[in-house]
Amino acid sequence: MEDLFKIRGIVSLKKGEGRTLKSGGMWVYDNEIASIAGDVPDGALAEVHDFDGYFMGIGFVNRKSKLTVRMMSRHEHVIDEAFIERRVRSCVDYRKHTVDMSSCRLIFGEADFLPGLVVDKFSDVLVVESLALGIDRFKPLILDKLKAVLAENGMDIRGVYERSDAKVRLNEGMERFKGFIGDEFDTKVQIEENGVKYFVDVKEGQKTGFFLDQKYNRKAIWKLCPGAKVLDCFTHTGSFALNAGMAGAASVLGVDASGLGVEQARENARLNKLDDRVEFICRDVFELLPELERNGESFDLVILDPPAFTKARSSIKNAVKGYREINLRAMKLVRDGGYLATCSCSHFMDTELFTKTISEAARNVHKRLRQIEFRTQAPDHPVLWAADASLYLKFYIFQVVDEK
Image (cartoon, rainbow, N blue to C red):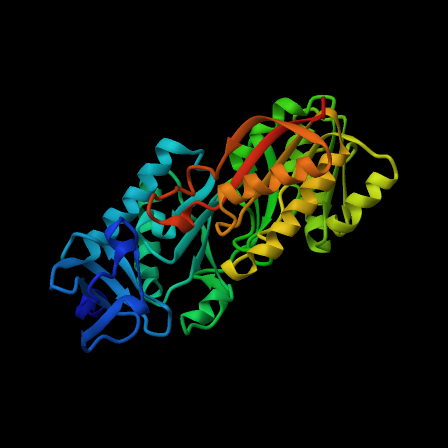
């Protein structure tokens, strides 16, 4: 355990570098570093100093990554077991005051000052995703502390599953991994959110199994749904569609290109006794929307919840085309005076660019938009100012009217 906390050396910044760190960020890139002094193996802790020797905090080092240092603390000089427990307690205390904890994200990486680590709670099961070599070393201790703190708060955990199978692990020189941490259990977990029940497949579902970040955005559409004809695009396992059905929609069509997702969505519809008016089909949304338009279809509410069309700055132009296309097509399918809920989950598609793209789509189809709401991710995915990547979800609700 002592080796885990040992400070192995000093990372010194170049003169004039470390601007992100100095403005409150949590990262140091390889091109900002002048030297690494001492015997500092990848994954180990080191002090970070400015060019003049000024102490700037402690982080863990990985030379294999362009993101070479992730900060664990910007002020304290010691990282120990008590430090980890304080961090974990802070995560739980924050969520007790901000979200329904029956299912929620308990740790959100840098925004919770535990860089590279995500932990989701689905009922009495934890799903962990570790994306950085340094935090991987702390993972067993963090999980032990987390289970203990949750138990103190009446939330006993029966099992932990790891979903560290994202490609970005390769950038850290780590292998992709998924499997049980501790005893095995049934990985099909039932949860409830906004009064809607779901089966979450923590083993085979996307990412950690379910997208918790849209929890309160899903609730925000309820007031638009009574008696409505609803189209839910990129439905995944049916979450927006089922919320629409539960809110009293007359009919709901959910669409996704994943056959597994659609089967899970249908199972969730049966679980909520909504399968008589909430239907799911497996189709490519980009192909289906023009087809619905040609068939003269129209809807009272269209929901667009696509996957991230870009995960890199280099592909933003193509992403803009994709977002413009689906929003343009969706607006054509909304009846005059109906509603559009649309979002982007790519942090590279910032709020300004996303807004501009939607506006261009509206002009192209001669529609006018009246903004009802603008929202971001749920509070269990906190936005840490100066950590730009922590703000990624943009969610608009509009009324769509013909040009008048």
